[in-house]
Length: 83
View (spheres, rainbow, N blue to C red):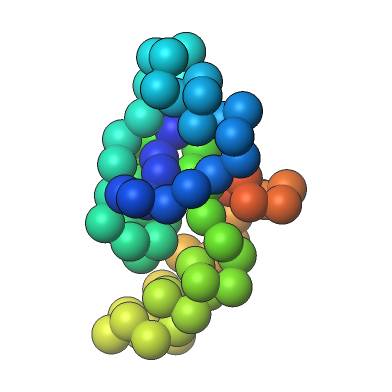
């Protein structure tokens, strides 16, 4: 299961696979919601812009410790997965 942000355009191939049902997704309203889905085990991967993801976590009301924990994920480009 992959987490994606509502209304975001991904690569043409990824969007095609999602549209065809080849990849099952959960849709979030923001990158902040995506990281919660990932850390809580609701999705295995998320697709997000790293800088937007970081900014949404850093401007949240979480403690600095929790912010660091949230951003401690593996990534390759715009794909992220839990450590």
